[in-house]
Length: 309
Length: 327
Image (cartoon, rainbow over all chains, first blue to last red; front, side, top):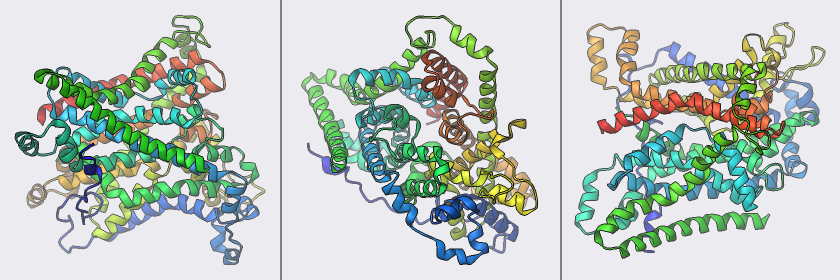
């Protein structure tokens, strides 16, 4: 298995610029300061964007009576309420709502469903980008077409296939579903990125006598790290937050992920919204961490495929 | 619990090692073939696993669904076009279709409008301010629709007037002395559907903003300077120079959000389950399948969803070909 070491992510130069990753001078008026109205409008938009989540976060630390009897904002109108804040809801999540099991299930579903498709898609993308063969354009167009097909179309027959294999309600069923559903996007964006790599590098590798297999492992895969990371984040967020496929292929059993656990809390809101808020926040935690720490890869991989000057 | 974690680890390691071994093996097999055949076969071997996954989970099931859509509830007998005729003549389903079209019309356009506004404004801020505001608006992208459901319940919630309000909107309304409103039950002018669309916009506008922002920054500064020297106002620069230059990205974003809209299920499922006249195709599909146990209707519904997608599909393929030709 020579060359596997090439899979370890090569450090990619971290861009210093803001999210976009495009170097360019700022567009400002002569004074170099942005007009006041711009700052005010943006500040208002940002506040509107953040307030709903903030409300959820605040409520998750209020006890049951407070959460169901008064708005979260009353906390700030009578600051004495601050002393009533509690971590109880988070304790109850694990004690009453079995969120710890759901959390482990979500990890067990998400990680394989994110990691496995990457390599498979990278091989296909390599073939599409650097190899000539009859039917290439047709197969590629099939991939592009499948990007548009709503996965709902596939659910019932797939459920029957899994039923005959006896794997409904288990992790492999949902792994296979997510691997297949994510594949067109994976092949598409990885191929788009590979198509921007300098061809000379591949040509010279060929002249040096490297086989396709070696070129893939030692050159193309390391050079494609940004887009692989970008797809990984995309797929991770998608699988972590997925409800529909989880409902269909797993259902509310003891393999159920966080999304299903949270929906059942949403259903029994009478019992207390405070649990729902803690659960909602708990479910967001890891995606937000992943997202914030890997944001620049996400944007770069996306823009490489989608944006042309 | 530990067993589950182990299971997942085994799946990750096994999956990756298995995949590597599979490709290595396929590659070796190809190398056994005589020279020219090796080169001919190898591309297909590299593609095989990806297309096996796609064939199993997408292509075969789609064909099968198409067949089921002409069969009865339990798929035991063919009924011709009955499922389609029943659905299209039912006023409930007509409503569902109408709502779906509203989603298609409003959300992609809305996401682009919001994304463009924020991208253009943030471009004028200091680098720090730009980064912060973009991150805040991009962040909901990481939040799933189910968590978003929990978040927005506390915006739209409504208590009887005798109690304190816990929903933010009603908090504001009653704060100004108004009567609390049951927001998600007002279906006049599809107001409640609009409120649900706001949630999707909240989740997706950041995505549009990030892509559009990158495109706007790609517009050459010299072009803009030249226009300014010629006395063009900021408005006409934006509409006459920036917009045409970022056309490709606008289309990409529009299509991507549109695809997202058509797949939208969780927001409506979680907030109203399609009640109060907010039903959309994806939710109707789920309820026909699991609540009404009617696999025939469910299949016909998703086939119609697929048909709605065909123009997008054709456009997408054309767009792709044009891009390839330009490469």
